[in-house]
Length: 251
Image 1 (cartoon, rainbow, N blue to C red):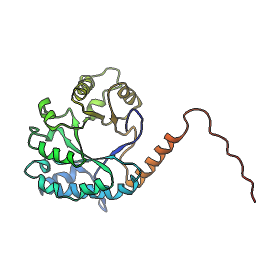
Image 2 (tube, rainbow, N blue to C red):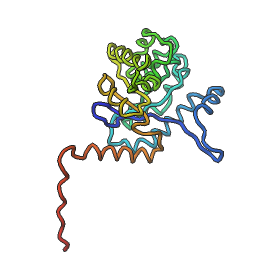
Image 3 (cartoon, rainbow, N blue to C red):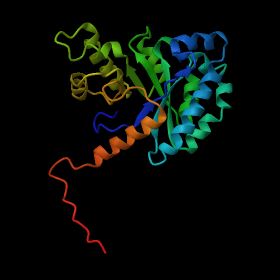
Image 4 (cartoon, rainbow, N blue to C red):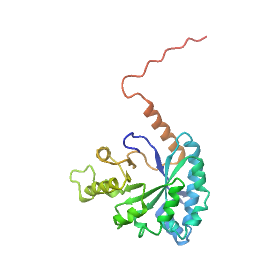
């Protein structure tokens, strides 16, 4: 959600599976994918499915941002050729969808092993985002080496905003905002769940927010209704009353 307009201008793709035995969550299937070394194959399937479902929905929303989590190993400069050959990026370009490559801060290493790969992704129109910012041990030099477009403040820091006694983690948000502003990076607050948190974020230099306060994870058909509902809300007059409809004569 863009905080200055309160419009939905992006979404994040979440992988969920369900079969006859029940639901399967990432903490159950991600370790298996890592063990089998099928991380890019998995990511490619997720992106392709998301683009197939989102393309008709976003036809009139150019540059709508679609966040996808990438595994750091797939972005190593030595392995980037496999990623480059993927057709999903061309599909995103043709659909005028802006893919946001989200990388966990805990997985960026020195910040140099994936720098060239990120430059390539940026050159073909992808946005680079550092996810769960503040939870890793990266120093400022490492973050600068990646030159991200966006940093996403982890939920653990947002949780303390709006409480009567703001803890050190809440205060740390202000430091993150200062770093981002100094280096021209946009900021997204993750895990926003209360009106108080949203109000505080609006008073600071936070560009975007996401969290259960706005919506919970949902399948594509529910997301279509969500976007429609939001569009209608923004088109409704903010002052005055709606004009009365005149009755039409039947002939």
